[in-house]
Image (cartoon, rainbow, N blue to C red; front, top):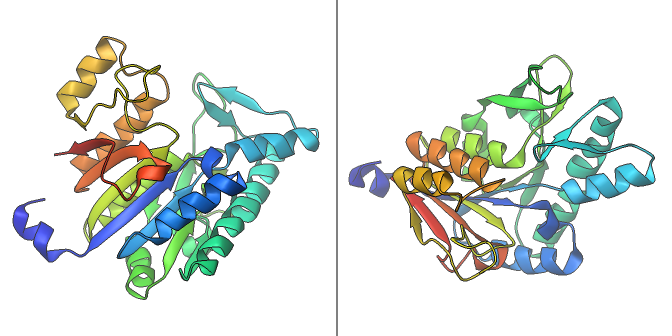
Length: 264
């Protein structure tokens, strides 16, 4: 974005929060206090994987993970739909309503707000897992301009009656891209760490800013690895698509401006 467009477009904060934070009462309450304090228009996207695994186990449904991604067969799809779209989502919405935030709990199915295609089988058959191909940015904008705070569970659909489990980081990135034409978007990925770390064993070794060249060098030398790589790939893709800024930080720091900043 140029300086002119930055000054014209209204600001929007889009927060993606990991499941671990929203699945425990104390950490959820702290997070909701901080989220409620964010000024202006905002969107929340959440996970819930640990709860899904726990409830699946109690129901005798086996959890299978490949490269950190959940394999979603027909029985697991029932579990994640109940947990993500029901238990976790509505707990968050209830907590925000208690804090005076007019939140609306959604999946991608509701109002046809996010569509996906079922991931094709290559080396791995992930089952009922979706890759986002359409976001209804106009409808998101309609809700936001009326003071509604959308709270998105990581479920989408294919338009043919099939629910699809969809990665929450990816949803966050795709929604941010779609809304970049309507708002000056800051996308915040928050989790347990303070940001992207130079040393995973040192919580204070936060890399304050990252360019694409920095990222490539850190991946090449092994500083950045594992699940942080796709999170950062989503981040750079969002920046390339017009998102103003991406921040990776801890859930307790979403109002402090600290963490790792990715900016074009």
